Length: 177
Image (tube, rainbow, N blue to C red; front, side, top):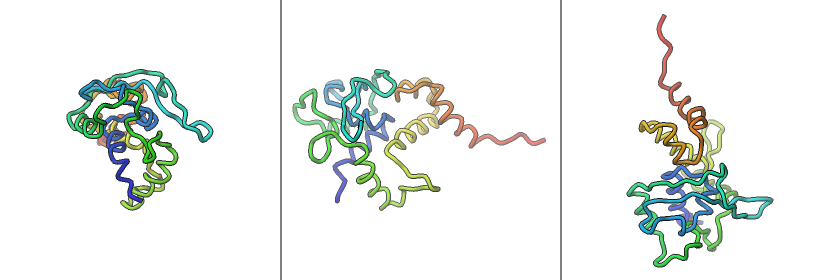
């Protein structure tokens, strides 16, 4: 099967650092008219195998995200002519909400396995790794943990402990005695 349908969804995950459940639940009413800003305030999660819309994010933090020109162009390219505000931005092939587990087990795993990227050092890559990549790249670019945390709906403490400490340790060397 060709999984090209999901390419905008995956790009969005990499370019925003949002949680997959936030992207899955995103509706066109959560954007400014020119797609320059996104309001993350809800999600779709799986509960006992069923997709459930939640009127909050994982951390219950509502946030606005300013789009880069590249992200804005992507969103404008997939936006329907006159989208209904409740229409999902990233529907499944059949038009409903993407099932995160189904997507990860089928499309994600198939594509990454074909590229020989699905597993590294015994660790399987998941769509959540897009978030990790975004945060790490933003830190490498010199953005503060506070700024990154606001963008991704986390705390600066989590960003520092999970991402920045690892980056610092990779570049630090003990002082010669």
